[in-house]
Length: 364
Image (cartoon, rainbow, N blue to C red; front, side, top):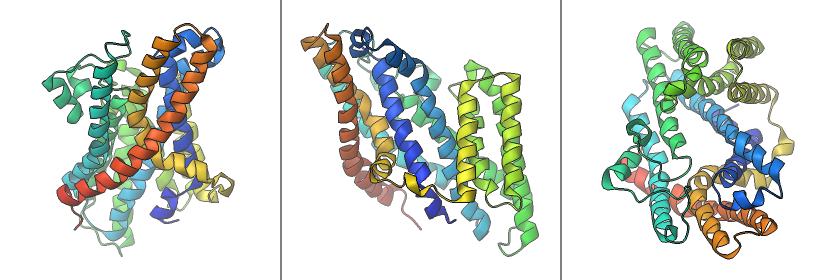
């Protein structure tokens, strides 16, 4: 299956779409005051979203690794040296153009509703350095308060991508000159890249991911990311099912050492992607709504927080105590987040990013 075909797998769209909805729902449950009022009417649902909705991030981590592995594989097939800095710069631009735009929206919306909604979910007014740290995705490292929900993930995504490209680049250097028609050279490259990736994956799963002090770095999350990478690479091996079994054994070892539901979800997601890639896409998942949700998922992820802030402020002002009205408000906030995400995708992520990429990172 070609790289472009894999990227259009119905399962990829479905998982991205479902995970996107869960993340928005989690933030609606986590950031009140609507959820605080609605809790009396739907305590089980809101508590579940509060506690477990964030685990959908693991799905995004695995799929990001899965898709990155496919992108890097073309360098192995062509024999071309990985342009390390160029790829990381392009990734930064793809993430940053919609990300910075969404941050500006969040800053403006927060300033407008701050006099109306005195609640801990409303970010404080930022100074210059706090904004700059967000633009360069360093806010977690320097300890600055987030300007919007979920922005930590964007910074982690860039770190993970950089680690993956660096490992592939190191593998190429260690493997020596590469001739795409030389099977031995390709096998040597595969061995080095897989070995390096496996070592860092094990270090993450068995050590870094067990220490919350590393959760501002990609090292904490690389285990989940690498599970996705390995699931993708398994499809091109002579004995792919043995690869998946080995991957399952690695995940099982990590869970035996210390059970973490986030790792269990990442392992299950990687297994699902690997099996579907080997057996063919699940065509019954090929639905227009799921494809649409998958396509706009990053835009929804970025823009939903200011949308939810508006609903929280309005509902707190007009319906401060009616539980059922606040549940309705949470539903409307979710639908509005999807609608605004679609508009944001059209205007910023799709068109705006293409223009900026054309100027700052033109294709050669």
